[in-house]
Length: 536
Image 1 (cartoon, rainbow, N blue to C red):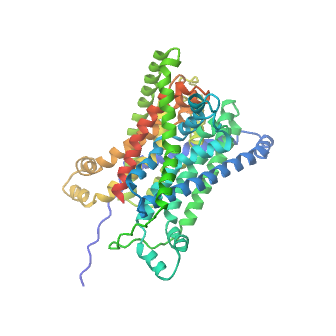
Image 2: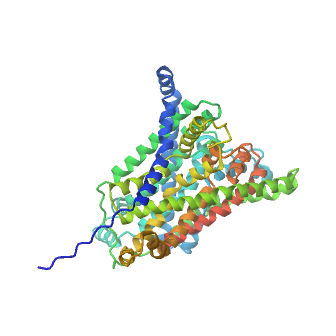
Image 3: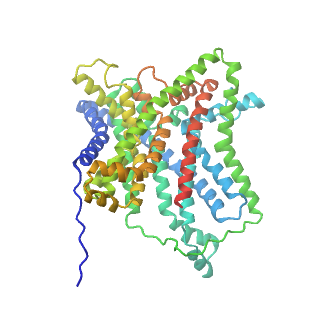
């Protein structure tokens, strides 16, 4: 009886092992320093900090905001996804693109826009004489975060709906079930993975958000953490960061527990295309709903930015100075984001290569560490790196602001580690397409590992590397919490200047920075849409 030839498993190169270990240590190091700094307090002081009623208040506020944002954004996203995939609504692709574009407006700019619309000095008051609603607190934070996170849920729901098996609905309808019954008992259960994928991103975004809650003056763990850091309460801030990280871990555990053992009926390869539902007169109600949603999530913020930007040359005393400041901030964003994107792609390559070519418990663990760094709230991650940098400078006798602490290198390092997961995904996806037999053939012909990588593997990886660099670059361009805590003194970026001016209600000065960030972010949204359409 013939036997199948046994493929000899290639040995794992030592340099890949070393690179993956370095990445895992780099991600874990700031998290460990949070615990080290937290236990610097005496036992009595520690108990007094942990047993404060304020901590319970912050926990309730954070969880309430996350749950409310998830509920609102999921509801809006499901309606839009259903209308643009399964209804006879005209111009469905047009509505879809407009509903996804709010993803190009970072949440802190969404909050700035709504603060600039309402109030006695807002856009509405200047144009109409009516002050309009003043957005702040829980309602303001809920509005800004829901409108920003709605496209994330929309993209997940849309992919899930398009991959549903329409025969299940037809069978349910043939058995006498109503449309509402089919929706609740057939369609929604099949969308559970899509909902969980989006819900994980939305919940982590809300838990770790700093810009929106600061501008809206709504106290959550992130808001309290930054306030404590500014007043020098480093130990208490460390424990708030640990609590923030604990919430993140709980969310990840719940997500893994819900998904464990979940099996659903997918769409068959030759399944008929689902028919579009005839909406009748409800078509006009749906179009009105989409118009109001696009007006609130996209047109109102953009028109606010443009209105205030137009006012700058006439209403700002030294417009030339602000133009120079804008170019300086753009330069700062570029010199921090470009190296971070290249470094993240370089660090992600060995992690993705080990995960795909040499699967093992070790390679899976290093890949999960990359995603842990991405899931860690930015303020907690930055605070851990701050403690490490201060200890490092102190150990080597380096004066403050002359060593690792508040250096450009530390900021680039933080960007690359935090957004490492964004770089790993495209590279790993490219490796799934590239067959390892080409590499094995190259090695059998006498080429070394490095030559094989450069002549065989790298040409295949170029598209994945380009996408990884673009994703990390655009994410770093609009990053706020890491930049505020780790940037060198006097170092300005688009995100820092937009946030600082918005926080002081200087809407005219903040507008050019907001428009620049939106322009760069629109590139990311275009990339996400292109990849999403390609993968469906």
